[in-house]
Length: 284
Image (spheres, rainbow, N blue to C red):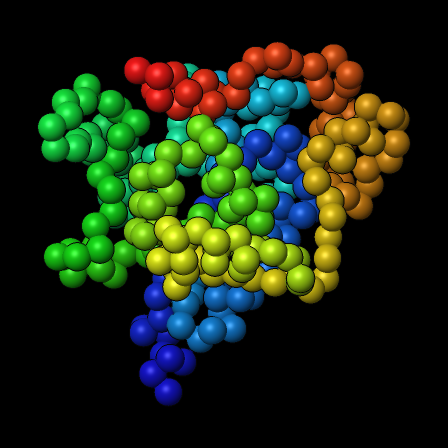
């Protein structure tokens, strides 16, 4: 069968963006669930998973420094032979849209020299609008008229939970054109619980319905309700988090005394970076 021929399979890179505050066993399970799903189709080969923690400029309440979050993610994945941590996004001084991170990693796969992917990419322009040269801008991925080399490049798909997908409806959190490019040119891999309303959410969105074939829904039959929020709450209350995060992450948290009532108040009252940016854009 042609589908069983490794040469015929589409290569996929799974990219997870988020706070990872801290990284948990659930975050790591998302990658395993998604890889199993793709391999079971017989059409795809997952070659890499990338964890990209958000930068401090995201301004989320309780967000500790990117240095600690990246370090914990690296500790959590040190024994993985396919999931790695990338600190490009977290090292930026300004908050970056998820789409820009997707473009960056796509371009990095086309051009392994990182200086090419960050500095030599042409800025994104729209007819009738002049934009300043932006080192964070990368060309959108084009689906048509691609060279043979680009066609064979691995697809970078955004790995997420159902909460991220459903956040598309929150006013000023996402730009419509960003959502369009993500689902049209890259694709989503959404891990959802059995019985979740993700399919209904897609059905109720004309945009998502139009690109539903590029939104892969992976049902999580062995449910796992671990979240970073609950981990931080347990730590503030002096409760054990063993078996909820990797042992090395727990040891790092304890050694550096990372989560406390004081750290949870960090950025309290500060407007989240995308809400601040898009709300001001809509006023202008």
